[in-house]
Image (cartoon, rainbow, N blue to C red):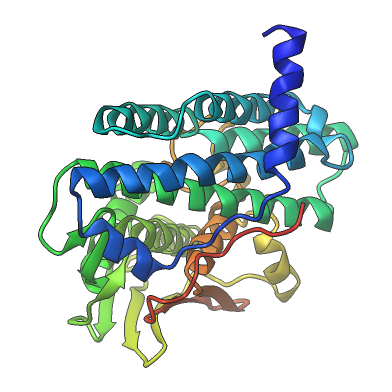
Length: 364
């Protein structure tokens, strides 16, 4: 790109980063997604055409201004270049005025979504580069706060793009784009159990049983892919803890318990294991993007994973922090309570009230 073009893009980023990002609610996304007519798709594309560059501009500005030299880490530079390329793709397009324009716009944002598939693991590699450069295992709170904002923004961008793309793919009974009107936590739990057991068997040749209890008939409006991501992370963590605590030759591994409960405000899912627990001093560190309780000999190599939803059994140190952000995206929460020497309980709280706005990072 010529110096003049680079300067122009920088000016556009600076201008759009002045605007606030507009939060949407799960109900708004659901209601809008029920109508996949060509005109409604064009209206949705016009909203995204205006909103996505603003969200990208906020993240680009922040990637340029990170402390402690993080902005200069090679992997972080790569991520920033991805965001700049996607920003250029969007601002060079006119707002869709015809159905043909909307189809072209949808192709562009689908390419953007694919381009950013591996951003999480690339950024994780950038954090490792910084850690090596600073020769420390501790992550400054300012960087942790940046990562929370960055990954939360990524979840929101991918949700908006994914919802628009899904509206193009034809209606599924009970779905509005990515959102299921009657999402069954128990059914998603069973899928997550099967995936986690398969991964555990690959690593250890054994896997604990998992029992599902509570209100297994409950349904509520939610995004099944988000719920699967969170439950898979929690269940695979519990499986790994149980196997490593008890040993692969233990005659009968303790069963992991998953309990589904329904309240007026929240749906709560508890994952309980007898995997030896986490020291009290380590609880706050599980949210730091570097901490892992995994056996170092079994930790995953530094691999670039091509999706948030592809992950090794353990070792990257960002599974729980990312899962908590998915929970918080629509007003939920993830809490972990542990008894060192016994086991760990993870509580996943999910808002039943679909009017909760998506969580939008506000500070640059």
